[in-house]
Image (cartoon, rainbow, N blue to C red; front, side, top):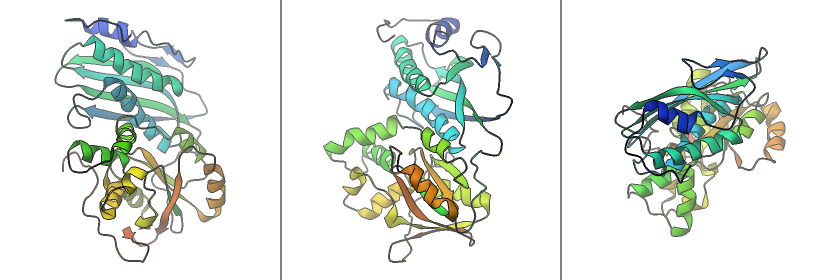
Length: 330
């Protein structure tokens, strides 16, 4: 696909046929996919359907000159991250794509990134819409399955539960800060943090493994502190989080000001890690399971009956978080 020469114009139907209808994966539960007024899908009778949607907008969620192959990956990854946070197995996606022009090379690379990740997780594109307009604007709706009663939710945390996070939050926030000129990153760390920003890895295996272990979960997209706050409000609880236990990558550890590094880990956003709570009697089970994960799993603190998120240093002093997470309208 990457050898397709640019073309001055292309119809909506040409774009659909050339770039999206010809994908290789065909799931047996897709009766009718792309090419009709709607898809015909065959959900499993003994599963709950999980549906989520995310939109990426040029110059809001990504720089307009971002590599389209990475953008195709990320557009799907952020949706798979939502499914992972609910313990759901991914199945189908629909795509809404608004483009200022029909750029064949951009579309070819976008599809390479999108379908490479889709193939890794057995996902089929079953429909969508392409339009002309300011952009790119990319909306993906993802569908997955979870057995009844096993979905990970935000409202199940209870006092005494232990808090964990996967991976190393803050890396994507550091990459963005470096791009905006507000942080300095050594050359040996630049490729790593750029990868974390542009090609996040959805923690799908971890989300599935947390079924029956975690009491509540959320994916970290707008900043760890802010997203954890959603869990606390939905569960009617609070939390004590020890910021010195945050798992910092070498890139963040190299920052001259540790408080800046900790703030990025708490509020940087775009991490797509999982934050979750585990009842005390399941902690040993969790830590046995997590020993086989390819990413870190770090204990951060504990759920409390007292409302609110209390950020503490190791010595017990309060850590003053000077910024919140991402908010589209603030």
